[in-house]
Image 1 (cartoon, helix red, strand yellow):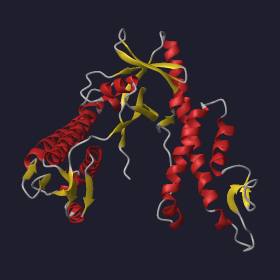
Image 2 (tube, rainbow, N blue to C red; image 1 turned 180 degrees about the vertical axis):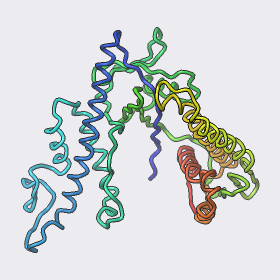
Image 3 (cartoon, rainbow, N blue to C red; image 1 turned 90 degrees about the vertical axis):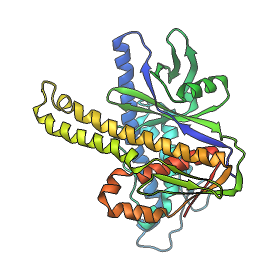
Image 4 (cartoon, rainbow, N blue to C red; image 1 turned 120 degrees about the horizontal axis):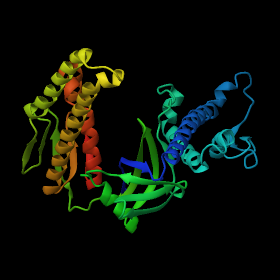
Length: 365
């Protein structure tokens, strides 16, 4: 039976809520230390899990060896001194004891073991390589690490403590549902799950995960909506009684191609830009336009997928069939212009997410 809840992840900028610059810097340095230890621990965990899984292939000389990846105290053929999950935790705990909260290591260990088990068949067949983690990876923490989450009227921000380090949120002009979700967490209406902290360009981002109930709509599973992606229209959807074309080729491509042209001009002109602070200053306009294109595409795709799901809800369609997707992707791969500008994959991801949230079953043909 499908779960009645859904997990949402949001990105919230947070600031260290301490009075002096020295204290804020000390707290930030501590976060960077945790990030570094988490990066090293993640690579160690995955390496140990892979060796444990493939250990039978290392016994080349004898066929009489019998073993089991289990605690030797609980199984006759066990070759481990403790449970398999605890082996990797003990490795990283012993290595980084006192340098990072154990709550972070525990949640990291659980997450990576679950991910490894999911991809295990592909590892065994040699179809997938082991994950390699970057130094700027986000690190996880459980509910035990966060406390005193509340809204402070004086600071006009949500405040909380992460392992006794005080933080406050910076939402700015929030046009999304971040504020509403945090208010619901404080009221106890929804649950906060294992979340992450991401450090980027000297800024701190909190990636909270909210568990919410799925939207309740009066949908009929027997009512089927068929949607297809085309080159003339980003989306065309129809039921037995209605049809809707969402967006046009000109609407989507005109602005994107204009941004790309401006980006090329900025790249050419960067040679003559005033220097003084190195590459960052000379490429300021280039970076701004790259972000502008990414933000525009993300917004348009969000609008298209939202209109598609609203159409299904309006006509009580409980099943959404995406037609001929392999053919469309094949055409996109053959035509470089289409592949570069149409963003099929991102659109599919947003459609699946919104359909799941609304309780609509997705079938890909």
